Length: 281
Ligand SMILES: [Zn+2]
Image (cartoon, protein in one colour):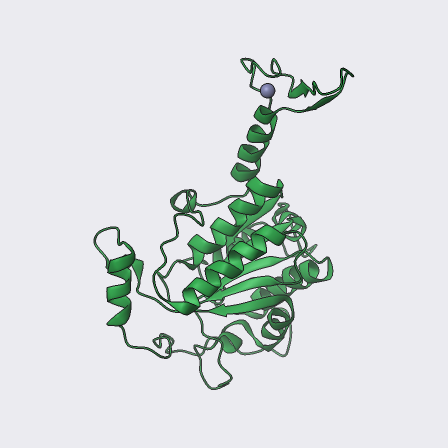
């Protein structure tokens, strides 16, 4: 881990002398801290396309809700680990929710040396499922353990998964364990939080009542809107985003779902194996 043989400060030991009062005291060298940050960032599992996402590279323009969300995310990172609640970033695809979630994670890793973990929700579930042992009803890989123990967890794209009973139980296990252990989680979701229980695209219907109620307790809900980054064929600046934003209709998120989101309860039993098809597809 200490590949810093050439470090002039510490000679590669990771410790350097504190030359303040003539006593032989040492402290961690800057090279050791930088190496530690790089290790923690690598272990966080941020997808390559998001690895450079930071608060300073997040483009803002006069959009009050977007600016408020950025301020809340910065505040969360600054206060970490002394935070009451996690964050739930809600809004249509392509408006930078993952960017903000990853920026917060990176800030917490680099600034605080925290052990953090990123997962796309469907990828996480398919990973757990692929290593799930139906006999012992545990995941053979230690994914579950790592996800529960991470000091900060980012779960991206919540609600995109097809919610079978197995998915609901697994998600509730993860979320409840983290809640009970007071470990914050940052979620993103494309599904709007409405009170309309007949709306199949509402967050409550997508994730289930139990999960939604827990999210309410453990997260600050931050909903915003903006132009879809992916609709630009160039890298948009603040002016481009503002112009597109002004011309965009306001209001509810577009409808997407045609079929019921939740699978029917099968006599309330835990259904194994998962019949949900290829997760993440
Ligand atoms: Zn050094």
